[in-house]
Amino acid sequence: MFEILDQYQVNELHVRNDAVSGLKAIIAIHNTHFGPALGGCRFIQYNNDQDAMNDAIRLARGMSYKAALAGVNQGGGKAVIMKPDGYYDAKLLFSEFGRFVESLQGRYITAIDSGTTAKEMDIIQQHTSYVTSTSDTENPSIYTAKGVFEGIKASVKHKLNRDDLQGLRIAIQGVGNVGTALGHMLDKAGAYVIVSDICQANIDTAMSEFASEVVAPDDIYHTPCAVFSPCGLSNVINKETIEKLGCMIIAGSANVQLENHLLGRSLHEKGILYAPDYVINAGGLIYASSDYQNHSKTVAMDKVSNIYYTLSEIFEQSKLTNTASSYIADELARSKLYGAINQAA
Image 1 (cartoon, rainbow, N blue to C red):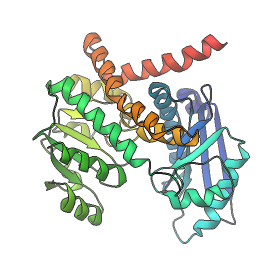
Image 2 (cartoon, one colour):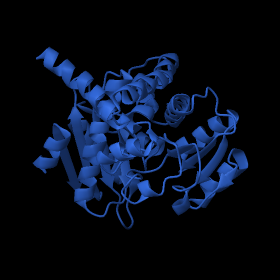
Image 3 (cartoon, helix red, strand yellow):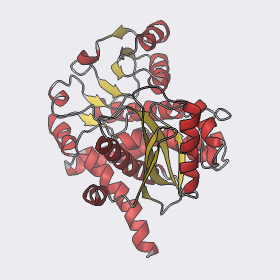
């Protein structure tokens, strides 16, 4: 456990096991130098508790890096709840999770993530004030999608030297809240939108509203396109899928898209431009932080628009140094984060 905590430089790991509600939850806090850790609550099934812990730890570091590069005064944290196999009482389970968050006395602020919605955040809010993304706030997905849209434009400008998306084939993997919002933006911009999802209802909605083509989940990787946009779960770029890629650019909202950091170098060597996930998908964090601190939507949207320029800077540094964009982003984030800590010390 301490080996992986050291590897990802995570400061705190909190575990709650409650037999009455069935809650099995882990909260990882990577860093709180710039402010309280803010990160979503993931509620999915895991094969075992080791996988759940690893997910929380990797995602928490990503949130710290995301906040640092987005200029948000938050630390990085993440919660994962192991979804029970059988029946569970959602109110009981998420009430206990709310008490878990409250016990950390503000060092961690929770929000929606894969498997959670405003409905669960409303239950959590009954037991702690350290929560955002409730039903009385705007869905952060639109801000995440806007950031990804800006990131795709920056990627296309750098790789293809184009200022527009007209006619470009862009393949979205996963058309849930973020993927659907992104699909509408891309369609409006004139792109040819290809979609894939394991949920037929999501596919039906996409085809009726913005998509031009559907491909099977296993075929999305080798589908010829300018941009592959992963908007689902983690680790979609791995040693198997990287050999299938039919794209020139990877730019999507999914967290921890690379199964390991060496794949960033492999993409660079293959000539595939990669928009580092925690940079391009920072829109949701930006909005959640702004909402929690009662800042205006204009302030949030201005910061989301800056994702274009942050990525452009990373791409230029990558080109100048012949270094993978993921490595450049990591170094830039660490410089902002630990440079500030060293100065404070």
